[in-house]
Amino acid sequence: MPSLRFREDGTFTIVQFTDLHWKNGDEKDLQTRSLMELVLKEEAPDLIVFTGDLIYSENCEDPKQSLREVVRTAEESGIPWAAVFGNHDSEVTITRSELLDALLTSKNGLSGHTPNVSGYGNYALTVGDNDGKAAAALYFLDSGDYSDLPNVDGYAWIKRDQIEWYEAESQRLEKMNGGTPLPSLAFFHIPLREYADVWERQPCFGHKHENVCSSQINSGFFEAMVKRGDVVGTFVGHDHINDYWGEMFGIRLCYGRASGYNTYGKEGFNHGARVIRLTKGERQFESWLRLDDGVIDRQTGGNQERKGD
Image (cartoon, rainbow, N blue to C red; front, top):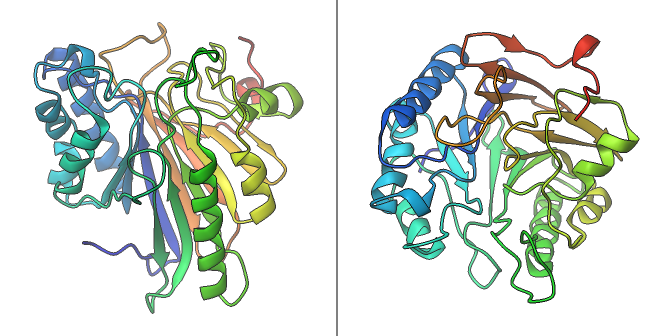
């Protein structure tokens, strides 16, 4: 398994692909692959992260084969990569457990699984310094698919035992770091309810073209991250034509930029990927969007700020 380390210049770059919705390798899927190849060539990241809906299982002839095809670009790049699942990955004909087995045997893949915790694919990775000592942490959580309660409609939520797992892992890494929380990022698919709150309460940068499709249940994951004081940024997908970010209580809540062509979008809203750059020893990060026309959108203000629904 490849190890993750900051570069000699102290940086570590992540490319986030989200909502690829790969089906059966048709023309639109090949457009998605071309986008991924373009972004990886231009950004040369240290890690690739897929934040859910890698495939559109309902329309896949062979979901496992579709999963293998969608991650092939990452495998062939030689760049380490990791993934979490979205709500469309296991809707029909295949289970999350079966998909996880495929992820865990993929080339250069770092995806993991914590048994006896809700979901499939809750795990943490660390980024080492020159000596290999953990200098940053990356949390990956399965935000589920749909509510399993008959009196609650809509999407699932990060469960209490997942939050307890995160808290325990965060405390363990803090202890290893001499009592100082490690600068950390968290990746999952379905946005927290706080994504709607930050849009209403704080300056946000980027685009909001649809409602925040979070769960109706707020299970307290954001509160847990604020209390732990390690996570400085969260990264989600799910809402294909939102790409904004805003900061609340020291955490930057960020959408990715939808990467897949085989699903809904908006005319004039180019597909792309989010790029995240950590710097060793800093409790912050840089981030920008790389679009399919080669444009870099840094989302730093001006006419990008707080665009309407």
